[in-house]
Amino acid sequence: MKKNNFLKDKNAIFIGTSVMLEKCIEFSSKKFKNIYVITDDKKIIKKFKNKVIPLTINKFAKFKYDYLFSILNYKIIPIKFINSIKQISLNFHDGPLPKYAGLFSSTWAIANGEKTHGVTWHKITKKIDAGDIAINKKFNIKNDDTSYNLDIRSVLIGINLFKILIKKINKNNFSIKKQNLRNRTYYGKTEIKNLIKKYNLDIENRTLTKALTLSPQKSHLLKKITGKKINISKKKIIFKKTNSKNSTNIDLLKLINFLGKVINFKFNVKKINNNKLEDLSLNNHPKWDSLAHVKLLSVIEKKFKITINEGNIDKFSNIKSIFNFLSKKGKLDQLN
Image (cartoon, rainbow, N blue to C red; front, side, top):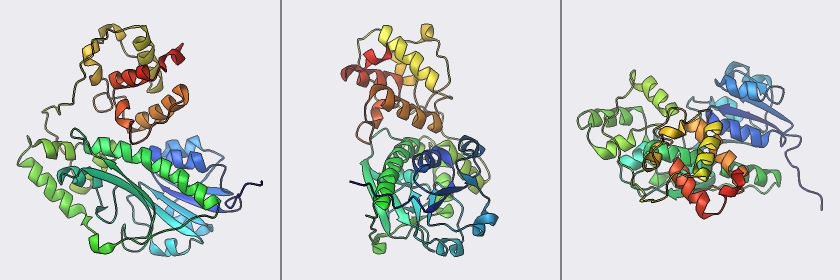
């Protein structure tokens, strides 16, 4: 049976930043006739040299596009550009809609004591985050989650949902559903400024500390909004410890060296205390940022032939939990 290839003569434009944009372009690179990209991230343009056509926003009208994908893009796209798209324009929103429209969705989810969070791919309209929903998914918030943790999980889920979307579009089997805007809440610049004022009056507040522990991208955005970098309390957020009697062994050393190569850092294994392995983590290591983490998850999936999703992603936030997970699955022999 001949496979459908609806997109082979279609053009797409991607607008945004981050590792998520990179992964979505990577997945789409052979799906569309042409891919155009508007981004401030020079690394993405360099990586896809000769595979994409880089543009600036003032050159947008120079070409015709069938699809537009806005990915972690915090700049407003003029509605005249949206209206010129032949098929559909979709935006990735790192929060559940219609409940958390606007900025810093993960921050508000934690500040408001939510038990679940989510992500949404939706149609772009004149009203921000109000368009019809193409695909969405919710996931649980754990007691020790920070905004940064939620954003990492959101990116992973968002990439997987994008792949599902493209497959559906390619089979011409794509549909959308309307938002119930009566349930809409919106958080903008004023609300986040007020939250920071509240935090500055109570810097030992653990909930607000977690809510304002941000990804590097959101920290940069917050600085642009407020004019200064927020100083998060130095009081350490306590994460649950696992009582393991396992001593450092050959498999663990191999895993540490393997992970170090992925994030481009050589760990001094002689100085690593097995009881402190949780500290070698996404939140605590300068080389282990959001970009490195998404890369790390991708490499682990391929190397150990496993699937990482919202159900088990917390098992991959530090070296000890990664070791325990792979050990239980009997996957460590693949390091040989």
